[in-house]
Length: 454
Image 1: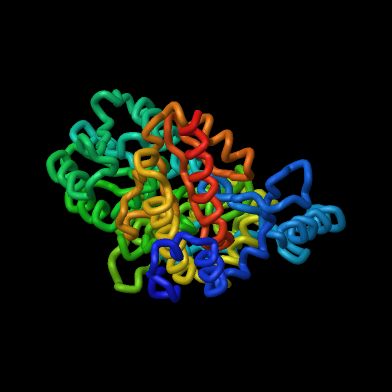
Image 2 (image 1 turned 30 degrees about the vertical axis):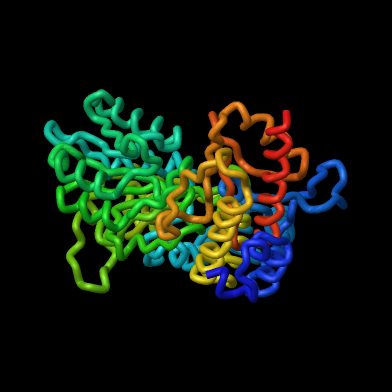
């Protein structure tokens, strides 16, 4: 794709700074970078050159408009007090509702199927209450080996809560020997062979360590054929990869909003529950599968707004994901997310994905052709349809990781190291440039050459 954009096809030109500059000039999304605060390379000198920030898979950058939005909320609190719930520029009683259409579009859902609430791990536990209902014969949970630790902690604790030993109730599928990623066929095979004993299939949308994008549609279809529920942790997929949760018939999904959704450290999360399970009328006329009988815990913010402040004795949940909310959302966290979602809606997920394929493909090309062989292995799938923007770089000599990464940081790189020997590089299409990618690879080459001379 890159070769069709640039005028010269020689290796010398394609790995040059001139090529990166031209790609940026032709980038229709290049101006969005100006909407974010970009960390300086020298933190003690705010006027120093920009860092090479390739860490949006860990924490997204701050939108410049955020401060004004936060100031507005603080002003309303100062001048209105409790009346800010119903007055002010963004009434707090409904502060999350304007965000739902934007979020629904990003995850491929109906508006009533998404809720903005809590944090990822909290939402995961809330979803496991209705969707992990073990019986004597169907009690196992299938997940990928090497999942993010919080997911493993959550799944194991739920097994313990139901008096199921992880040795008996947890199935973890790993890549085949000698391979870096899990084959979809192998996942489906396990579901088909053990499905009668599996209550829940729970995977990441994108594997946090390897960067593999799982085939959520195929996994969900296989799970449902065997009578299993299917849920996903979308921490590394939301705002990064194409999602169609409703059409894929996913039962539930949870995510955080501080990575690719740029809403700030530790901020509010999101949740999806398919409408066929919660009383939301379906366009195809399908009968609600569980509806009001869906087991859950309740809180007053899951009660219909027109009766929420009547302080009724009985809980009558709102149809859809909103019925799973417990408490009113933290206003400042919602404000942070609101600013970022406005930018997303302006840029468009399709446009962002198109650029992402180019940007990460460019990173891959430069590593393959500009980094000396034998130092780094890309363990993320080579197929662009099986990954998001992240490439995970395995250092073939693990002893090099600390010294190389330290040298890179001194030169202004902000990236993510995962022990023992992987560097995760994520060029985010919303604010990263082709020049960022070129600078990183040029710096990495220089540092590796210096390391080899030691």
